[in-house]
Length: 194
Length: 169
Image (tube, rainbow over all chains, first blue to last red; front, side):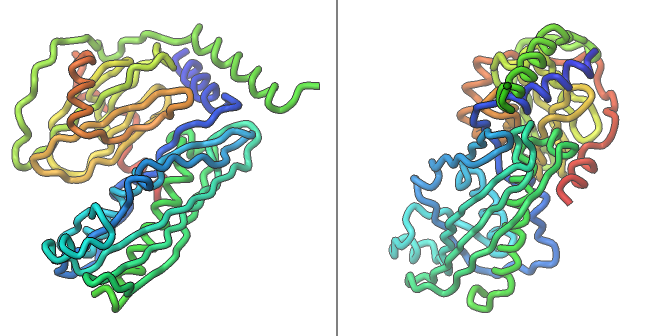
């Protein structure tokens, strides 16, 4: 009986139509591994504006439904984690180019990501996305404000019913995991960011 | 001629009705609401984890078993919370409604820290577990009811840490 009730709950949630459903795009922290990385002994900052943190994105789900999420707010911990894997100290900054703050905190580089996403579903009957992409266009400036690096990477995530029934946000989280692992690799291999 | 959307609405209505009728108040773990006593601060090699379930009417009759890796540590109804103190390590905290886990969160090693996880269970507001800050957690804890289970240490069907590792490989 219990099994029936849960399956109906699941099915009811996934078949519910005409709505925007909230998902969460944060990948599990253990999927961004620091393994094999030697930290650079520098302090770095990152800048995400108030408006970016508050941004609520709505994109396609399955069966004509939509999904909503806060890409910057939900991916900020992952950006912080990636930078903490690479540098000895990471500081969130209130402004992108406040020279006094950069000097006082001895910030070597300031990272500024622009995050965009897409989603879709191959299912006509369930709303969780089956395909998701996360694109990060990231720039890094030095302590004087000069741009020293930029890169755009795209992570992709797919999920089928058998998997996403245990995590409705799965495709999105897989895409975020892919994107931030790529970002980590790109920063590690950038001579300008040593 | 019914559109696909109409068909989905019918399926949803049938499922919702069936959910209401079949919801069980099973008490496998002998859960009870208890007065909240603030736990001791975690030791230097420990992590204190609070798990709260938001108060929402969606699936309100469904209890969530809270599992730490492979062990059932609590049961939550809407507006309930529980806490556990664990050795500092990776822990997969899972919200499980038989026969499947529905929400999960990977706690990373956090020596001496207290973490607060909120299970969101909503029709449009989501079904996932996310960390919340202490201020928000304290407000909810003051309004929510602590629960405890009599049958402790019962093993889950599997180790969900391994399970979610595989899901994200």
